[in-house]
Amino acid sequence: MKFVAVRDFRLKPGLVWERLDRDKEIILTSNGKPIALLTRVNEEDFEKTIAAVRRARALMAVEEMQRGSVAAGTDRLSDAEIEGEIRAVRRSRAR
View 1 (cartoon, rainbow, N blue to C red):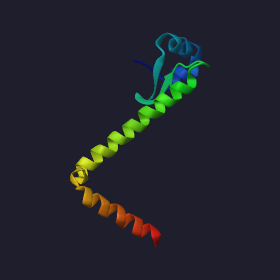
View 2 (cartoon, one colour):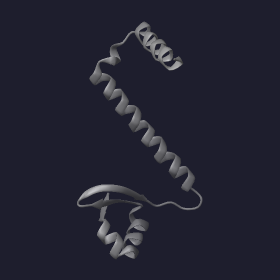
View 3 (cartoon, rainbow, N blue to C red):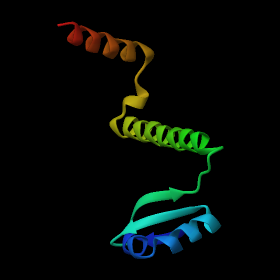
View 4 (cartoon, helix red, strand yellow):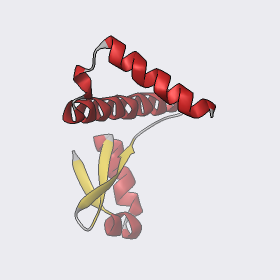
C-alpha cells in the first residue's frame, strides 16, 4: 500500500493521479497519520466499488459491536434475558 502526504497531494496532484493509476489505491496521510483511502474507479464499476466499501464498513461496525458485547459480558445473555431487554426498551419508548 502506498502512502501520500496531504502536502504532496496539494502540491503535486498530477503525480498522485499517476501513482493512483499504477497502484489502484493510495492512503492519504496528514501529519503521518492515515486520513483517507483513495481508490481508482471507472464509469463502469464505481457503484460496485462504493457498495463494496459500504459493506466493508458495515462489517467493521458489526465486529466492533460484537467486541463491545464480549467486553460488557452481554454475549452470554440467554434468549429469555434478551427478550426481557427488548420488552423493557419497547415499554420505555411507548411512554
